[in-house]
Amino acid sequence: MGGSISCCISPGDSPKLHRRELELEECPITTAEDLSEDTGTYLQHISDRELPDELAQEENPSDHPKASTLFLNKSQTDVREKRKSNYLNHMSPGLLTKKYSSCSTIFIDDSTVSQPNLKSTIKCVALAIYYHIKNRDSSSLDIFDEKKHPLSREKVPDDYSVVDPEHKLIYRFIRTLFSSAQLTAECAIVTLVYLERLLTYAEMDICPSNWKRIVLGAILLASKVWDDQAVWNVDYCQILKDITVEDMNEMERHFLELLQFNINVPASVYAKYYFDLRSLADDNNLSFPLEPLSNKRAQKLEAISRLCEDKYKDLKKSAMKRSVSADNLIGIRTSQAVLS
Image (cartoon, rainbow, N blue to C red; front, side):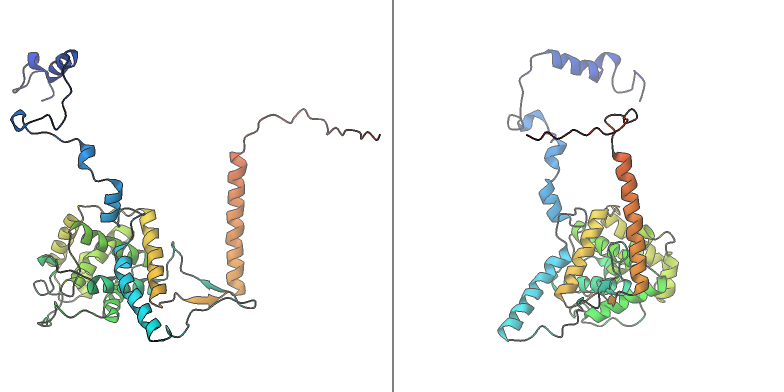
């Protein structure tokens, strides 16, 4: 079709020549309102079809760093009710387990956005999934239904779609997969990003009947995207004895299709989910481990700080521009003071 002559258009009726003739003629400008049904289908401009940034951010929190995460929004209702109940009943929020620094002891948190604490991160992710299940609607898909696609040979109870799983049950399920597959804490955060992206794109909810398969699919995909040495699908079949490789492949394929093959996680989105998980932990009295600052740890932090200072000094020197040359300067002249 790249030649000058095709089976559909002759050289004399080239679309470029026809477009040029229309441009030379004085044609009135028509809008969408002026077009009637007899003139044909009106092709909308791509800018009119795209969603505004504000709407896109509200609908896709896993894609935009400014949009609030779904799990944090769903948890705020329970947090407010718990605080209100404690206030009305004059109940204390519980034992103060958080440690504070003093003049003699300094407590530091080893969990950072680049190296999160594995156990605490998994607890926060499990708590986020718990709030998703608790404050759900009723939309689901058959591919994630545990009764139609069981993960074990045990009989699925009749009330499997009604009874909400506890936070400890969700945590044990995720911890078993992470410890067996030797996954990192960063993979847990990416898992939560993919889970909320699935719920947003597919317009579905996570519920007691599908949460295990959705979490498993998110972990499977996150481990392949994040880790350099990803765990194969057959390895998960060794962890979950009763699941087949064909079922894992089908679930992964449907998961990717529902995500529209969008597996990109920007650094800003990753950081937003990390800090929102920390906020969720603070609201639910899940404290990250704090350890006293030792001499060895202080020397290590001091060495890292010194390396960063030297690095920024070198960058600052290379960025400085010399306006004039100082090679011909002999000395600094001083002016004599005049006393009157």
